Length: 110
Image (cartoon, rainbow, N blue to C red; front, side, top):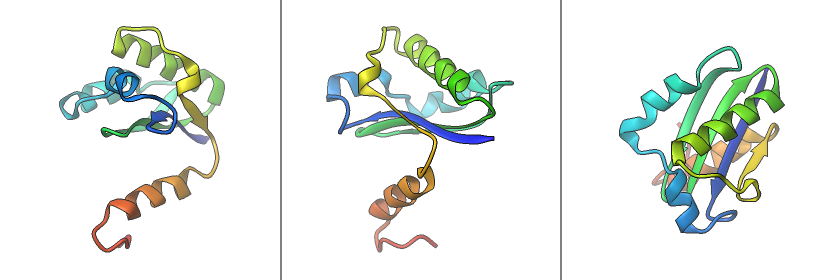
């Protein structure tokens, strides 16, 4: 199994693009249900004003990435420019911990 993240952030896309792909909090459960299946076993969605990221557990990275790209296009109702997105299959946990610690008041993970 692989853990991948597909996303875009303030570093890769302007705000107008990020807004199109944002996932409102009220839609997260339905989005996760739509993504779950044989290709993506588990997923987590992180959607803020600065980034949209989907963390997914999958057996086949390329197949999962294509499914995520297709789903994001459908969700946004617009074709996406893949140059605004990143796909990672390593060092994900250090990225997540960095994000969490930046947003905790005392910078510690407990």
